[in-house]
Image (cartoon, rainbow over all chains, first blue to last red; front, side, top):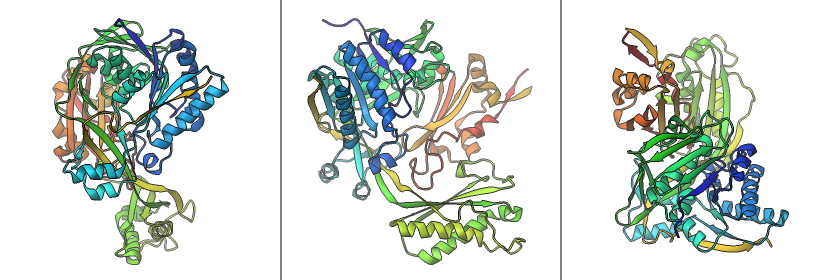
Length: 456
Length: 108
């Protein structure tokens, strides 16, 4: 028997990154949704969390948000689905979320339930084998096909799951699902597709719910919204007493954080939003019709994200007030660079300068070329294979701003002001080494699903 | 003919990461009239954006006029992935200010 509609509650656009607001969550929970779903990850946070295998979110906030969802979903006997556990969706982050769920079950004496989870880390050797078989790992967003050298530079890789492992986990009888790295929209689309709703509307439902109240107005993050899917349309309703989902807010959200507002690519196909029609359904609800889903031709491709360590990193800070030095800042920086190069010629290192007051935020994109500031702040970033070398490079690169040789400088006792006369250790530098896709025979081959019993 | 700044016409002007390799810019209007007026002005085109930011047009990978949201949207490639050494805006969210002062001529 097919369902006429289902309702999915989305409490937070990025679980744990900032805590879920409780008032609108409880208003939403009181309406007894059919599913509690939330995305917990993003590549927005830079490459360091994935590379260093740590969270960007605070543990207590993650626990808080999971607790809200778990208690409501267990009390009402409906599934709870989480994607991209712990920001990156790496294996250790999935384990961490699984442990949190187990602890919460114990803490609240929850009756027995089934917890499914899947990993999405991909072994480098698996990819190497594919490449050796002549399979191209195609680059996205202007990147070239993956090379073995880039693969070698990568420390950790996650595959971005589509709906498949979530549907499989529901088929296995899961009450709670903790997913590795996943497409944000798949977390919501999976239960809707499994319940027999059209893929086009299901993926749109995921698209509009993935950032929770970012699709509502006035602006206010971390508030609950509820999406309703039927066989004809999607409706999205704001739960916060002062928020509404309007045509403007929902259509505007379609383009948030994406290069094109019309197309969304997932493992298995593409959601085409070109012909979406947005209507005000009631005061707090926007109704959407007309999305299309175009299944992939040939093999399904799965997106891969990879992060690789570049080196150890230190940061130096220097202030400049002398107008003559400000005018000649490029020469000053060149002098400092030359001093580092003199000491470390032929060695592998990176030295970066950002000059705030000139173009520190925008770099070469800054249209204002003339520096009018009466003072500058120079941030020096030194990256090298060892901590000792990174510290020395950054120290020379910073302190030599103080010793810059300018022919007409009046102040000969030092051409820079220091907040601290030292350089500061920072987290190691990482970079996104992979933003690619890999073809697979079975969309589940990268995501092994495990199921355990918890509580009781 | 008078001239208004884009910041006086648009409700939202923002920039943000679109994945690891791109930054996307949104200019959103509250009223259809203002959106149509800016579109018709020809002041916001791929070429004008490239000139403003001092980049080659090929670095702009998408340029879309998105009628359902009364929005103009374009996306550029980063020169290196977000958060790499040397990057100064991990989230890409402070790259829009040059758009604020774009001058739009208004027929009166």
